[in-house]
Amino acid sequence: MTSATRSTPRQSALLPITLLVIAMISIQGGAALAKTLFPAAGAIGTSALRLLFSAIMLTLAMRPWRLRMDRAGWLAALPYGLSLAGMNLLFYMSVERIPLGIAVAIEFTGPLVLAVLSSRRATDLLWIVLAACGLWVLLPHDGGGGALDPWGVFFAAAAGVCWAAYIVYGRRASLKGGVPMVALASIVAAAAVLPLGLAQGGTALFSLEILPYALGVALLSSALPYGLEVWVLARLPARVFGTLLSLEAACAALSGLVFLGETLTLAQWLGVAAIASASAGVTATRGRD
Image 1 (tube, helix red, strand yellow):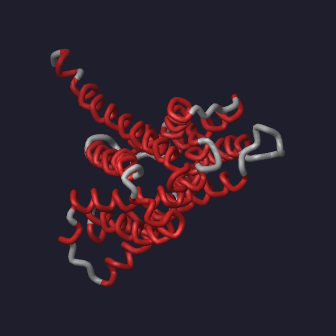
Image 2 (spheres, rainbow, N blue to C red):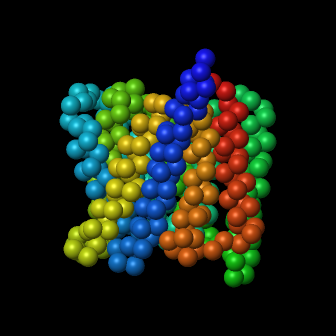
Image 3 (cartoon, rainbow, N blue to C red):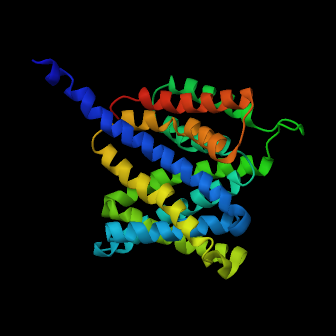
């Protein structure tokens, strides 16, 4: 076996890993861009615009109208879309009040708890303890200048619950229609949040000053990273994919620092690192399942 042949597996993994990192940067860069829209469109209005334009992009790409939907299919798609709506809306309402990196770290506790509850390994409880320690560091304990907005923390945690529901309902929906169900869920999500966005921002949401940024948010936060992640999932083991995805909390903190000037205390950095490490740990040790 030549040296070139021996290096093939490592080289074949390098491109998917690189693209996954690009996807994470894209998502958090889109979140930072979205936060700059809050003064003009509000968190709810920005969420509505992101979901609307994401639905349009994903529908054109995946053509969900080809699906033959029966009652069971719609019963799978509706909660899938509503959980997507809640996840996006609550996350934006969170980052309106607390730093981006902290919001993402708290949100990660939702799928982390879901992973542990679906596991039969007692050792996974250790990862929950680590995540709980990180969460305790991030929670507001007093009224000092470094304390986080309690509502921001609550909305991030609620977004995590919706994220866990999105995973559960997404698995069920994928059995009914495969990947195009994501586009159908995005249409449901946009239909659920758009009336709320219009109630907050009215027709000003569609002003020429806002629309280019809203399209950028939808592209960076949904269309581009989703396309990259689908490609990567076909080429990386799910365990490796999930472990690497746990770096997203740190990526969010760096995105907040670079694009928004959000600085975290040392304790907050440690809290984010603890939750990210717990997420990576529970994924990496779950085995083939």
